[in-house]
Length: 627
Image (cartoon, rainbow, N blue to C red):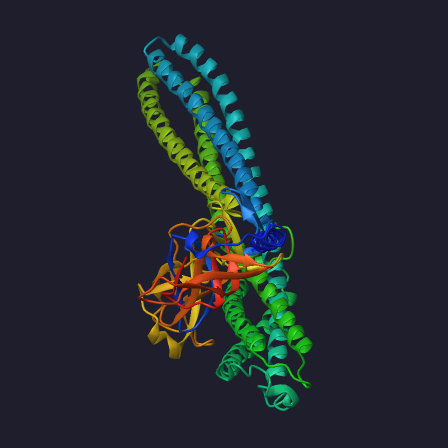
């Protein structure tokens, strides 16, 4: 527009210079071409301010809940597809990933150790089978051969007894050591659970007292906030009553839980070893579940309290700074409650969720470990008893008489058959235990892969090239899964949007023409969408106009004035070639007689001009003939 005004100014100066330095007498007869004066018009009942918006707006959020650590872009930034927009703080996922990897390594070590143990036992049993078979065949020889074979077998059996005894002691040591480790782990778990209950008691007590003092619910605090109660949640009084109802329910549960918890903590303190008291452990576990339930209820109540404070009306007695301070306090309670419900680590004082999870995991994992070690011990014990029995049998062989060789042969045969059966049993037991460990490895691998997927989900990327039109959160804010973080819009797929009061919307219809005021060049589109309902606050209806081709100078978010076409505005337009100038004043030759070709000089007043036409404010009317 500035360029047009400058060009018009230069044009006026040029015309003035020409008329003042080279004046020429013009005869009417010199003109032959005529022009019938026409008008340029738009039609409008009311003008509206339009905004240029995108047809495609996407709300972006994380797939996981937690705290936002980085926001890399701001509103109205242009971003490219795949560009990193924000990240979450999620050390728990990293811990889960590394813990899973460590457990996989440990299970593979257990797998190899178990495999080696069974291989050694199978190898020993195969040796016993070979020995039993050799002994069985040797019984057919003479008594002298029997004595020699028995002596060698006795030495071998003695070595097997010593080896079996070593395996038995090793299995026993492993079992006792694991029991001690698990006992200490269980002691730590219930000690941390006690801390989680105590911390939750403090958190719930502070939140209940804060809410009571703020809204004056109990008899003790009923009139403490009278000076600002009328402003508190003034925009939503029903919510305040709902908060009081929910508070009384939560407070009633809390008082019962508090009595039980105080007695429980006292019993834990007086107990010599909580891990040896099954009734006390069950009470801790049930208390943790009740604690989690109340924390969930407190989380919903805190959300309502925040909404109620946010809908308050500031005043002299209840200024905005006090409202903001209460909102900040509620947000702190919300963060602490979320931490209690979401955190599950081993490295510091556990919160409720972690305590429940560790108790449940300990019961499963400790039983699996103890069962495995007990089976190994039983197997080693059986092998030791068999080796001792074999040794004693071989020892007795040296005293047998020749007439007893046939009987000993039957005994050797039976031992051979039992060893073959025992070998098959060992192979099946080996396969079963290795399969069990491998199944656990696959389960932990699945957890590791899930953690790896979650590591990718802590980063938020732009899905396509676009403009960030809205930022919904701030850094360090805790968000839920799929909570909108940004709104991104396509800057190339645009539409005009304006809002019509409810009382005027009856004059606005789909496919009705609309026009943009751009000097006298009429730019016309049609209305494509009229929303069926009005905004409850502004009492206006949203109307949309789809744009087929967007000019390069138009940008997302710009404003412009437009008109629905139902009232007429007109201007007189005249081509440049029919306008003359005399000492800077514009005039035309206007026909003054219908029957005779007679024209007279008529001075006119111009408004605006472009390269082809000028708008005439005074001096002419529509359908005048000029030349």
